[in-house]
Image 1 (cartoon, rainbow over the protein chains, first blue to last red):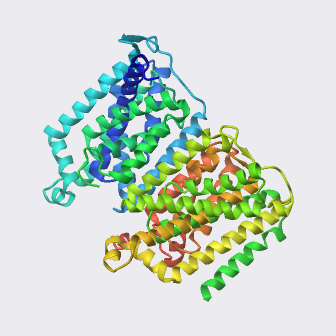
Image 2: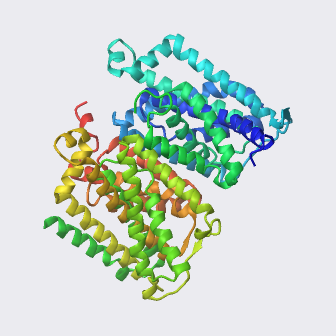
Image 3: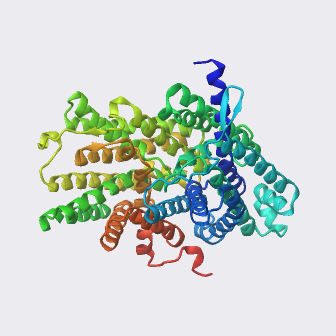
Length: 290
Length: 320
């Protein structure tokens, strides 16, 4: 069971899965880092993005990788509007209310999708969907290798955005000291909404990367919610590098647990890590404070 | 005494329902609404009075349900004894998860997350463990005798769940009037200040979580007896965690009657939706979600808050 011929493919596949997890978590951690809220609607929004990518392909014939270019800005706007006109005003500035509002949003979105599309599971068939490349003892799915590269690129782009642009500086200022940022003339409500939009845009990209090898149904995003929470907590709430590293770790853990404990228990390892990290190191690997 | 009289009157009025109608549809609706009221009261003790928002009350509900069901099915234990053990087991899960979370100082969103994770872990374990019947589920044997906590008609079930709700109302009322309740509210309002004032915050929160879990587990035990079927998605599924918090949030967080009122309103809305649109999946839950958002946005004190003040806008908005 420990022979490298089994282990290496499991680890490599885990890394590829982990990259997409990382992208989902990146959106969550960005929102957490600035707004200091946990967005319980994240999974539901991912499902929306997956449906959007699905219909781009089935109705418009757009390849998911092309659709990502259009969906990302679209979902940025969706996230912006949600935060600026729904979550922000409805929460009255109380964190507990935000928990309830985003939970309510998740319930509404998920069931609206269930109502509209029923519980059917949908997949798309791409000509390259089952292509593989051989790396040492492992056969890796081409769409997932491409996905891995795109995730790294998105993470770098986000890092550059946060580091070198005015918007990025404003976001970081609001994250560090909201009142101070407001006093220096930063429109906090706007920055909040921009951050939420960026987080949602990450989901659109993640959905397009998932679609070639994954399925979509009204509950599809849920599978990623707790995983993304785990990654965010593991990597440190609000840390971009943490989300990336955490995502890769979790992908490998899931893959190895699946190998040794069986498919259905594969996720147990993730939740055990989650609970252990929450209990013993809630600041995570890269986090600054709880 | 006046408050207890209010509880007595409400319970007495509700107790008349089976005398007025023998319609199974109505009674079934009322049983489910009261079940949610009970589970919601459990959430309210911890979330409403203590300010610790749990997103994983399914952990306690499911434990109560499974323990009752499995004890009867596999060990031939009497159902009433199973009820007591089920409640105790739920309380134990509450104590253990509470001790772990509060010992690590988890608050706010972290607490919501960790409770959610505990419930998910239990759900995954229950969905593969042989003792729960894994994918097949647990089917409690049909045995329509009162000794087995099963009844031919729905009325006895109705009175039993009403009795549970009555007890939970009295518990909430006693909590409001007690020193422990005052400590709990102090923790909710400002944990650091409560600590500085000499309150043992950890013990207060832990006691509240144990009590909360016990009440919710009682709902789970009742569910097992009433529906006689359990699987991982029912017992530990997110639906029950959501309904547990929906009832008190909509009815009025941290109030005695909030969960009962909220459960009745939410369930009525659900039924009304089904009547109007037919049995389409998802629509009733969609309405619940909308109501949740609207209540948080426009009536943060819930429906009881609206009735008390006769105002629709939260305090801050009145002058603005």
